[in-house]
Length: 224
Ligand code: DX5
Ligand code: ZN
Image (spheres, rainbow, N blue to C red):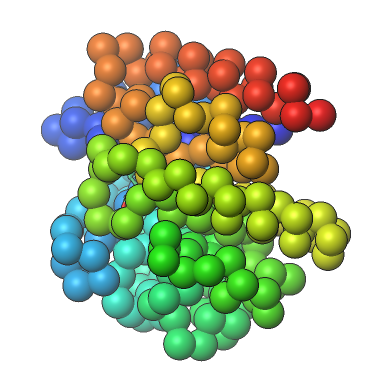
């Protein structure tokens, strides 16, 4: 079942509770929270206190995307703050296997992310450990960027690998998703569609979620 996962990076942070309530009314059950440290990516966003506050006002699963230099040090802090799922970048983890196991031991699902310049093959030896994989379809750091089309080929490669190896891991995509390309992402094999600007930079975020979901479901039904 394809899921639309709103990224709150594009929401109005002064009215975050209302923004979240709006997408929840459209049936959203997972939210994507982007954490940036000004080192791994050239931008800053939210930290544990904000995650903790969001945890109190929603029943959605919290999918926390760590774009930081030291995920080993901070992943447990974000899990403590309420993250259900934590994504770490392959590029930021020297001992990726250990990091994923640590996240799982701390009680969260462990996802691994690769940047646009990182080949899918870098994940070959970790696919049976990770709970899910995120393919970045923009260079991380900012919302509102243009979708990198080659990401679809990477999703297809990963989809083939998970089928060959009979791995149940969901594939997530993040960056530049719009109503025009969401169907391509689903047909390539994506299960979880992260989207920020296309939801929160519209007059009616709930309607935007519903339209996006409809486009995704139509694409999924054609695929089968
Ligand atoms: C980018 C973030 C994304 C971002 C996507 O570094 O990881 O989650 O919010 O935003 P849009 O959908 O606007 O590209
Ligand atoms: Zn993200």
